[in-house]
Structures are given as C-alpha cells and as structure tokens.
Image 1 (tube, rainbow, N blue to C red):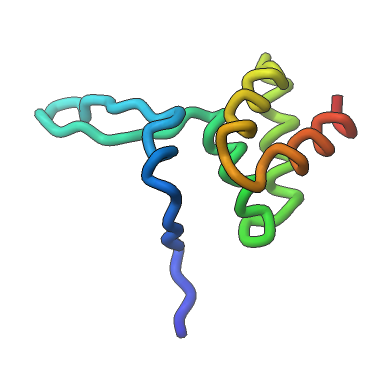
Image 2: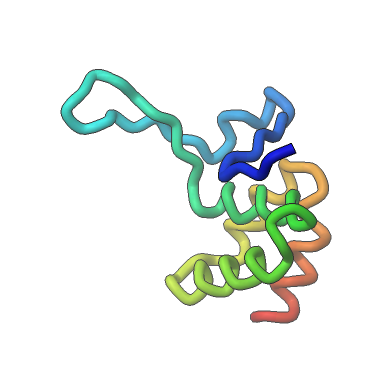
Length: 95
C-alpha cells in the first residue's frame, strides 16, 4: 500500500452540509464546496488519531487567537459524533 496526500472518510449524509458553503470558482461557472474553519477543526477532533492531537490542538489555539469563540466550536461538536468530549477537554486546557 502506498501513502498518498489524500485520505477518504465517509461521514453521515445528514451532517454533510453542516458548516459547508458553495462558492463560485472565479472565471468559471463551477462551484466548489468548502467547510468552515469551525467544521474543519471539529472534524479534526473526530479524526485526531489520524491527523494527530498536536495538529488539532495547534489549529484550535490559532483559531482562538484569531478571534474564534469556543461556543462556535461546541455548537458544531454537539451535532457531530465523537467530537464533543475531546474538544471540551482541549478548550478547558488552552483557554
């Protein structure tokens, strides 16, 4: 098996649009879906064994430094499995 830069994960279809915006690709008629920073951080908590706890912690710290609010992350975490408890623990330590 070879390593690649892309790793596929399958999530519940009911959560697919949570924190996702469609934006127009400049110069074309095509749209692309992008997840918000909050959704991305919460997904990283869900995948922390894959992406690494340090990455998740550092991304959370940087997001907070830039003005993010813990309540915004918790709002996403309560809607997605396996994210709420580790996120809450991390926020308690770093805030």
